[in-house]
Length: 400
Image (cartoon, rainbow, N blue to C red; front, side, top):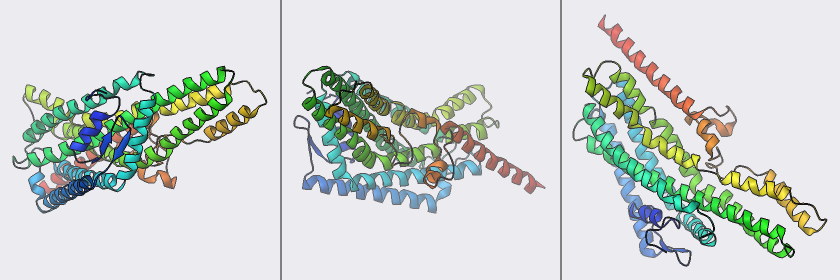
């Protein structure tokens, strides 16, 4: 295989290895994932480094919060910015800890994905599109850092603090984004494998000597579904739950800065007003793109449903094959969504309009139903604006 092939997750895994996330030796031709003693020590070293940096940054932000103050922002916005950068540090640390604790389960999952990918190599075309989320993420990273540097400089942040902002958000965006890119790649492999099994099962049903082959293929198909429901959800469930919560928290920051400073007349020159409007609008776009990537491309459930519909139309012959199909269909009808964020919500397109950060906390208690995601973001914006208005009212009262 090519050294720069995307179809076998080679580039994604190598990038995550450089970032200190997956310290594995992957033998792509043999579909084997190994971890040596040196790699174990290296993984512990990276975790200790991230822990030390996170603790240092959070401690620094608590002892010197005024270093993170934006001179052209209000008190509500500065408090919100402090919450965001502290949460960003903690989420990054939590993700590293989860990856370290579950590294052996990840190795098992990656080994299964490489095997599945090898089995459908050349059968389907979707895997050639794996380069797109990878290149998109890196492009957004570069433009995001330039936008952040300009935004913090214009907003009046101390020059020595701007690199701290850029390092924390840049490192977090690289790590969290590459994990999302890997998850998207695994989705493509699962979908391609399901498509291949649907084609094989249909061929078995159309052949005369189909019972033995059909039984073997349906067992392999069940194994693939089990990988989705157990291994992928176990490895990525909590990670995507943490990433989704953080993205929902940070998304209103750009629009809120736009409302609380630009529209209040802080930038009166037209060209500066226009440029700052574009900066604020683009501020949260890279993070929202990660959220859309993790859910918009999920067609795994749909492809699995095609299998159930296909088998439901098979004419009954009164043989053992009927019982096998009926058992599979009954199990499939009771199935929960294949890919979930640790059971809290399904990772598919519908969730883009169903999740809010408060619902994530309360869902398992059955206290409330899903609200629309973008409606939730608007709600947080309204809350922030209300705090801003309270702040302005307090200042007006103090003048008298």
